[in-house]
Amino acid sequence: MEQLKRVDVVLEVRDARIPLTTRHPQTAQWIGNKEKVLVLNRVDMIPTVAQQKWTNWFQQQGEQPYFTNAQHGKGIAAVSQAAQAAGEKMNQRRRDRGMLPRPVRAVVIGFPNVGKSALINRLLNKRVVESARRPGVTRQLRWIRISEQLDLLDAPGVLPSLLKDQEAALKLAICDDIGEAAYDNQRVAAALIDLLKHLQAKIPEAIPGNPLEERYSLDPAHLTGESYLAALADSRHQGDIERMARQLLNDFRKGILGAIALEMPL
Image 1 (cartoon, rainbow, N blue to C red):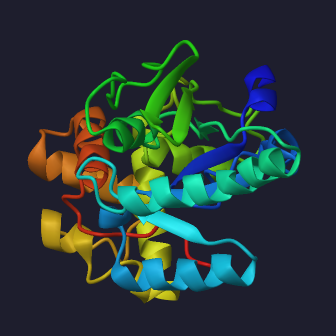
Image 2 (spheres, one colour):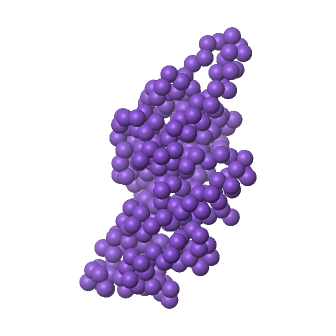
């Protein structure tokens, strides 16, 4: 992260469905005392009550989260203004030293697939960064002029070199935020079912209704994630568990199961 030395403001993008899991463990170390703007993308995929609770929680931690739906441009103007306002402190220091102000240099960082390229495209109002759900699309570093006031460094997604926390790794896989790492679809789909059941029982405001029963006409209440997945495969795909696992993960990732927050404030 050598390039970070050259930036004034860091835009850290996380997945609003799993804002704690998509916090990179080295972010604080990389950013140091630079200004930071916290962006929680995919706000359209979580319930409004979850957004409110996360807003309160982050504010209590001394951070102001900016919620976006980068695919559709929601919340982008506020992020741009926040980046320019954060960088204005740098220009004030330049003026104090008798130097001319310059465009604020910002960088977008975050896990693979959390929506960084879509955010940059929205900030620019045009497609310059190839944006896809396919991991590893952003490969090299480059500066992009957003406006007279803002230059942006586009950086590849960064995964921690070692994901020690198995629960975190499963959540990243469920949300498809894990880059090119290979994972077992059946294990991940079973983990999603178990997690949805846990949320329903313990934190119902994170998951309105019973999305699994509503979507698949089968109540998961008395089944483990694994056995529920097998039962669905039997009834829908002639026992093809792999196919069912892929469908279920896809249904979640595309929002077909509804707005669901996989994490809520502690």
